[in-house]
Structures are given as C-alpha cells and as structure tokens.
Amino acid sequence: MEKHGFKALETEWWHYTYQSDIRYDVMDIPFYKL
Image (cartoon, rainbow, N blue to C red; front, side):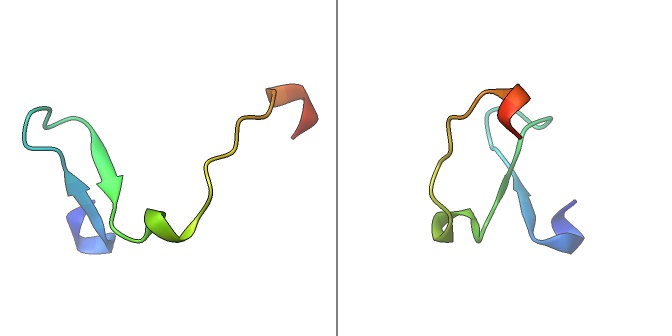
C-alpha cells in the first residue's frame, strides 16, 4: 500500500490514508446514485 502512495495510520495499522486525497472534495451520495 505504501509503495503506491498510501500511508498507514499510526494508531490503526489496518487503516490507510492517501496522501493526495486533500485534492478531492468529500462526497456524500447514496450508493444507488453512483
């Protein structure tokens, strides 16, 4: 995961965040609208 730009959270090794995610707005849309 880290090889491709993801970083593990220090408190939860199984959760990752993407370093470039700040460029994208958070979307809250229902699954059926996708």
